[in-house]
Image (cartoon, rainbow, N blue to C red; front, side, top):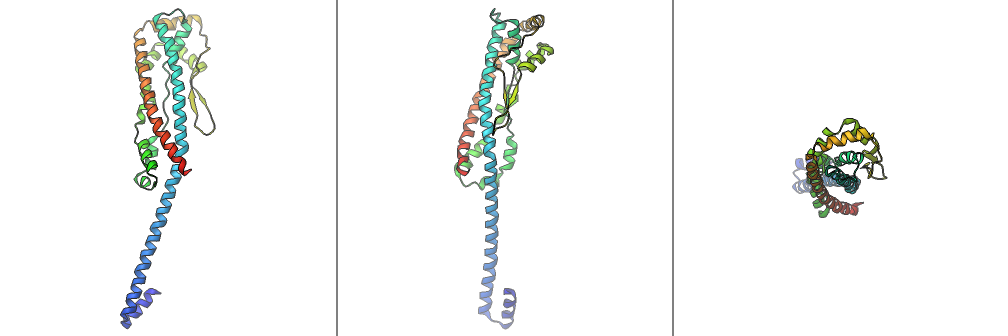
Amino acid sequence: MILRRLTANLRAQNWTAIGIEFVILVAGVFIGTQVSNWNQSRLEKRQTENLLAQLAPEIQNQLAFFESARTYYGITRNYAGQALAGWRGDPRVSDNQFVIAAYQASQAYGIGINAQNWNLAFGGDQMRDIDDPHIRRDLAIVLTADYDTVGFKAVQTPYRDQVRSVLPDSVQQLVRARCGDRLIYASGVAPLTVLAPTCPLQLDPAQAAAAAKALRAHPELANALNQHLSTVATYLENADGLEQQMRTLAQDLKSIS
């Protein structure tokens, strides 16, 4: 309708009306564009808020992992103490205990996070749509953290490979079946891995003696185990740093829940 009136006024050379109609037309286009942009911006912000809401339980899963990892590696350290005593020839450690402890000390547990997916979800546009500067800053820290330092490969040390190359596979299978990693399921978090703090497995005496003899034939494994323990300690220090960053972000995200 405006265009028809504008055309008619042009023919009539009604310049005042032409000016008014032109201003109305330009204003309408401008307002329409602004409303469209506002709606798009509102939708993008809502999408970002939804992504943040979905991120909150993932953060809780990772915090639960850090707690379980400390417990897990506390148990493997106890086994390591028994194994080192076995290599020293401590008479209080039986062949059965020595063999089981040497294997259990090599058990490893790594974080299951896929930070790449988080980075894909929170690209530059999504980060700009986060109004809260604390969330934006702390999310950026979590997204750019080095998760390789708490991944499974970070604790896949030479000791783990070497001790498993010395112990007979039949023994390893028995230990895994009776006392290996187990998954536990808790409400609201992903499954967590646990390791039995003690192992009631009783190997055949001859089998235990042969396996213990094979281990003692490689005293260098004791040094490799010490190095493994040092690697695990560094792993846990890195985990503590990442956990603190995630706890800070988790606290921030409560403001939008």
